Image: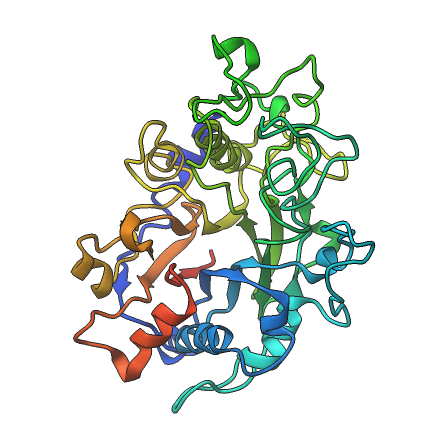
Amino acid sequence: MVNHTSRRSVLKAIGAAATVPSIVGTAAGKGRGNAPTPRYAAFNVENFETDQVQETGDKQAEAAARVIQEVDPDVLVVNELANNIQEATAEDLDGDGEKEKDVPTDQTNIEAFVDNYLSESQGKNLEGIEYEHTLQPESNTGLLPEDDYDFNKDGVAGNRPGDAFGFGFYPGQYAFAIASKYPFDKDEIRSFQEFLWADMPGNLIPLAEDDGVVTEPGDDETAIYLNEDEGDLGAFRLSSKTHIDVPFDVDGETVHGLFSHPTPTGFDGVNNFNGRWNHDENRFWADYVAGADYIYDDSGTEGGLADDASYVLLGDMNAGPGDEPLDPATEFFIENDDFNSRSLPTSPGGAQKGDPYATADFGDFGIAQVDWVLPSPDLSLRSSSVVWPSSNANKRGLGDDVTGASDHRLVWADIAAK
């Protein structure tokens, strides 16, 4: 990782501020006199699909909108919201000569979610939220390369979901989208969907020659790897969805929203392919905010952020402090002075489960801290929370909507500009 000591040494103390925890947070709680503090939020809504948001009446969508309205964020990223524009391009998937379904494309899924759910009150004492600005980036999930590759080493090339750039049964599944009250200049957005993993110096890509003995496809002990001779090393993209930098105009100041959703660890071969992939997807942002010159975006522009830029990282990073064996969250977020991680959001519900910092409940797999809202050190973190009421405090029935919306919990932070 590239380090810029100037940011770390000079800006580290500027944004220092006491944070005030809150169970939920309300619009009123965002005020500081006549100068409201911008509220940023990340919410993984668990495989949120097109037919759920394009029409009214879906219970999961109603629950998710209720949770979001309780918080009233100014900038919101919704992870695992399908990209319907990509989905509509899916070819015949079952060989019957027809596309699987007719996907509506008159408006994006994030626009539909805003119009059908977020803008309509989802409960007593709640108001609808009007998000004038939305963005639905293209995702690598379910997107197959032009040439056929056997990325997942199952012996069959060119098949979804395992041979797509990112895991997905159709193009755009598990994508993410952004809704904002603040404007952004679309011409200034930088996306890194096509950045190749092999172009990251010091990457952790498992290579065929590193595996020793490679077992037969389909064996439980199969090692997943990339192979230069087969061409997949030069084709495999770093981002399992996309990495995107959206510069918001926040009351006249530019704050860069850094969004991604790295692949989950596990679900791979004996050489920890997905764990290494997740590590480097998270490392990308640490290098980007440090101004690494190896980075290039989808337009060909090179380099990372300017040294004096302000930014907030948001999303489900599928990484938490102490995750073995690579622990990217500790290295790139917690112990990285380029992010303000001195006071992380907590919740009563997580504490009741055994970890106040937890942001997801995976049932038999336990709870985890994987969702993040992290500002740059020059910004002032005013307050933050994870929306997870304890079972005995179930605020106005909110707990039912929290669990009904997702296995993840919405995470928010009030972050003041310079």
